[in-house]
Every structure is written in C-alpha cells, then in structure tokens.
Image (cartoon, rainbow, N blue to C red; front, side):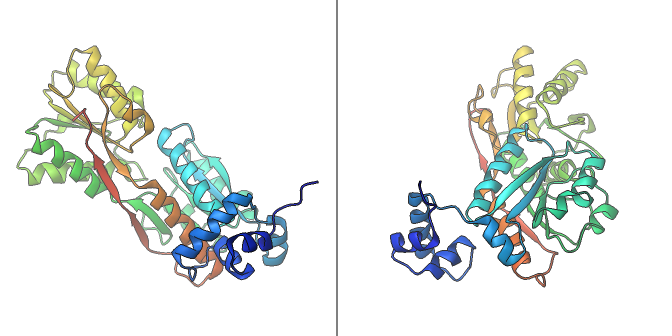
Amino acid sequence: MVLPVRLRDVAEHAGVSVKTVSNVVHGHPAVSRSMRTRVEASIEALGYLPNISARSLRTGRSGLIGLAVPRISDPYFAEVVAAVIDAAAQRGLSVLVEQTGGDAGRETEVLHGRRPTIVDGLIFSPISVTQDVLDHASPTIPLILLGEHLLASRRSRVAVDNVAASDEAVSHLLAQGRRRIAAVGAKRGSTAATAELRLSGYRQALARGGVDPDHRLEVPVHQFSREEGASAVDRLVDDKVPFDALFCFSDLMALGALSALRRHGLAVPDEVAVVGFDNVPEGRHATPPLTTVAPDLNVLAGAAIGRLVERLDDPSVPESGSIVVPHALLVRESG
C-alpha cells in the first residue's frame, strides 16, 4: 500500500522545516519567493495533497471555495475557471463551480441557497443580480466579485479597467487612420456594466481623436456570442452603414464578425480592421489571427483567491475595495 505524502516528507525533500511547508501550503505572506518556489517544487515532485478533512476538523473550514460564472462553455469563462482552480490549488483549496447562465434567479440561489453553507467563501461573476440581493448576501461568507459592475456594492471586486482597455483598443484603430469604427456589443441596460463601460471607453477614444459619434455604429446585441457578432455585420451591411473597423466587446463576437465579413466579401484588415476583447485561444488561430485586449487572468485569479484567503484568516479585513487587473493589447493580423 502506498502511504500518502506528509508535510514532513515535503519538508525533508526541500530541506526546510515542517512549519515552512505549512506556511507555503496555507499561503502565508511571510515566506520568501525563493523559499516558496523551493517548497512548491518539492510539493510537485512528491505529489503532496493537503489533508482537507483533517484541516476541516481543526479549523472549522471545508477547504472548498465556490466559483459562480455565467457560462462555462464561454471560452473566456472557461479560462477564468481554470485560472481560479490553479490559484486555489496553490493555497491547498478546492473549487466548486456553479454555472448561472446569467439568470437572476440562479444568481440569487448561489448567494442565498444551500451553496454558501458548504463553502468557505465565494468568487462570483454576476450579470443580473440586483443591489438588494448583493447587500443581503451572508456577511459570514467572504464574497469576491469578478468584473466591473454598475451597482455600488460594498463587496470586494477584482476586474480589468474596461474603460481604459477599450479606449486603448479604439485608439489603436484610430492610429491606423480608421474613422468609421463600429462598436459591436452596445448591450444597454446590462447590470454587469461590461458593455456600458466598454462603450464608454469607445466613445472616449473617439472624442479624443476628434471623431464625431454616429449612433448607427453602436450596434446592440443580446449576448456576447459568435452569432451576434455575425448578425451585427449583417445589419451594418444591409442598412448600408459605412464602416472601416469593428471594435467587438468580446472575442466570440469578433470571430462571428470575421466569418460574416468573409461572407460579404470584405477583406480583413485591408477594408475592415477587427479588434476583440478577452484573448480566447480560438482568436490566436483565426483567419486572420485576431487583435485583442488580453486581461491577465492569472493575476485576476490570484488576486481573487488572495483576497478571499485574507478575509478567511481575518474577518476584520474590509470587504470593500477594487483590485484592478492589468491588461495588454495584443496586435495581430486582423487590425
């Protein structure tokens, strides 16, 4: 019978104390980077797994973190889920994933149903939930929100700066001499604010570039999907609205737009430049490869887990406060 790897085994392999290994496993900030790397290498080499059951008895915690996202099938959220699971594993935590579909009822159930009773904390990417529901979520269960939001919630939040990122993307198109830039994704009224904030960044860049806005170029959608991106191009073409670039509020819409542009015989990027948002893997292999805004998902996941662990270790840590995740504009061949 193969015996499980113990903390002591890891300590002997790394040449450190059991206390040091314990500090690394539990994410204690006092451990130096070099020591953490050394211990993590031993953990990886030996295949050590924390004893969640024993820790639960000792600390009253399950070692389980909840993660609620709109759609796991969305490539962006799939990558978010993977990054959060990796970040949690580095802290010796497991992740229980919930798919809400962006439905208000299911989002409310995540916050107020049975799930909060079996997890130590919750990382939540809301779309439709109301201010009242957020305000009345259990105060004893640490809650970290992913993404920017129009609601003035007192909860901690980890998000990319959508206005700045969108401004940068549109400014890039303006620098190429594009002046008829369509904003694909102007989903007005979205509680999650992603569409509104990206639209704000789009308008901000146009204003600074001296380009008069044209409401016909702000194309509303029902959801951020390939089908909606293709439909947006069809509407622009059918309505004879001139455009020489597309800023799509998600890569999925940009991929759908690329397909529709080919169908209409419009060359990318010669006639129409295309920029997306999210840096999903499919965009790297599109024809042509998609220029996109890339949020740093490893930083996002690490920051969300880190803030959650802080609250678990010290409930007096303030819930409010936003952590801004860095982003980069990845210029490829589409624009």
